[in-house]
Length: 50
Length: 229
Image 1 (cartoon, rainbow over the protein chains, first blue to last red):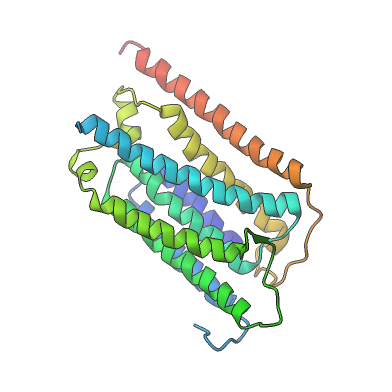
Image 2 (image 1 turned 180 degrees about the vertical axis):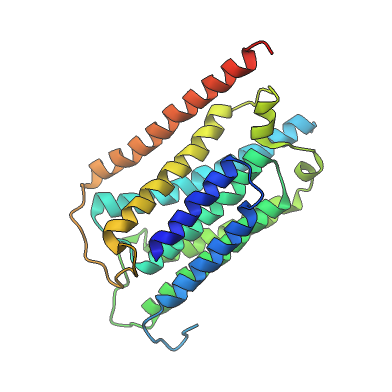
């Protein structure tokens, strides 16, 4: 799962080098995916859990 | 200040930001390979956001100065802050605990990460106040080079971009043995590190590989520019 996050960044970097239009949407998707993975790893309940 | 000087200064700021992020990622790689501390899932989230931070400067350098590129870095900093704050809260919630991982100059790495993200947001806000680079029609380094326009400091610029790329590849490959294709363990076991000095040599080698690649690309571009049409 975490591996996919970094693979997405590699695709983003390739897109930047090739000046592709889809880079900006893919960056946003990758950031959302990073947040999803953060939420999935919030396994410890703490008072300020968000 | 002329357009050329403005553009040069804007590129210098973005290049400096990129090298600063490379330094942060290099530190985390040293901790992983030199000291043997495997990154926790929240650490990987923060690494991912650090890479996201680098996207803005890279796009500014290669595609031209645009506020939208800075916006992507701000969003990445916000995502990274969420990861850092979560880890700080876990630490606060454990009064008997001494925190996670080693402390550097009194602060744990997740605290430093949060400081980095906040400084990045503040820094980008300050840079966005300077409107001039956006009014110059900057085609970016990629378009400039393809038109045969010589870009000053191209080797350093390519070095920063390629070093960030090499570090991303190393980070990606290093995730596989720890997490595989599934979820990462919450508390990964430390691995046998290469040692402090060998760890830094490893980081230096990644920089050297990027530098050699940058010089090769620069020479190739110079040859192409010199070739008769």
